[in-house]
Image 1 (cartoon, rainbow, N blue to C red):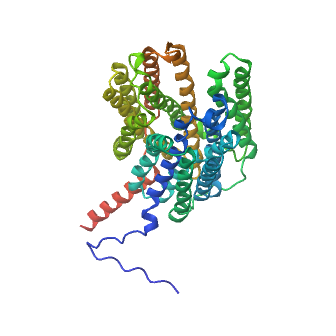
Image 2: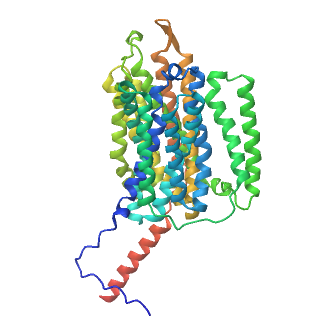
Length: 497
């Protein structure tokens, strides 16, 4: 027996409020992105003390950062593809659970081998943002999607700005294991909230998972990022670094050949080579480079001893507080990014964001001695990053089929990661080359910092040019449908009149 049609609501009656779990979907996904960024940042204040706390060398301790970078770069496109195939909420929950398990391991151990393995496990959380953005595309109506995606993209910067002062406070006033117990509790809460508040997306792209493609991508990226991250330590002309770069070129060439011949590739390279998608990835790489230099250089600059003539000698906690305004700005400006993208298109928003980043570095070059100017310049860079990072996923969502949004955004996040790793190596090389002895220690000169700012600003301008070269935005299918519906409604009303 057919069910009766629902009674129409009287005119002027408000629509019923959505269930609580639907109203919490966006906050829960955003909190997962913030928690991921916090997890990646909290170890930074510990690095100077970890050799004493673990009995390991400084070079070994640095692998607590390198391991997370490598595993995150490898797992982000892999888990994005798995989400498109097997369910985005399922894979997102698994990524958060791996992150939490790594935090528990760090809380329970002081062995450097266990700590490095745990940090590698936490790298799985790098896939949280692309998976969440794909869920938002599948679940939200078009009018809410833009602001939600912009907020999700900004969580990376927000979490990083919150994580540094939080970790510094814990390290300064409590046992360092306490920090990981706290993040473990937050991670467990995030897993439970995600499973309860986020619905499983019905959009799937079935098929057999490309295991060979995943292994090839992992091998190539590991060689590339290991060479980039360790070049300054091992020597850029050393046989190990040159061998890693050669291996990366060979493996990635073979991987590209295999992907083009696979029926169900891990990464659809034909899609990647389209100008709208490929240039978006290039812009992501350049933006990641330009953004990351801000955090790296600001932290070192304000902590430099006053004997240098420019340093402020700030503590780790004070350094974190200097970066906090940038995180707050990213939270406040994400809705503006969505409005600009809706009015002018995400290509314009991306170009504007890259230009603002370049302006921020111009402020840094103009004055890097006064604290308020340092904070102002860093905040301007953070503002530009918000605009750029919020526009990138929207560009990808408009250019790829619904069944490939998680994997395509995963590749875009991967390009940002490569840009950040390259930025770290380039900034370190500049600062090491421009150092002078202060109290028996080699400290970067102010000229070295200004060169780093100029380099990052130039890359930001290159990102702006890459954004402007992306073919013009076309309305998405949802937008075209909404416009057609509105036009049909208006025509019907006129005919009735």
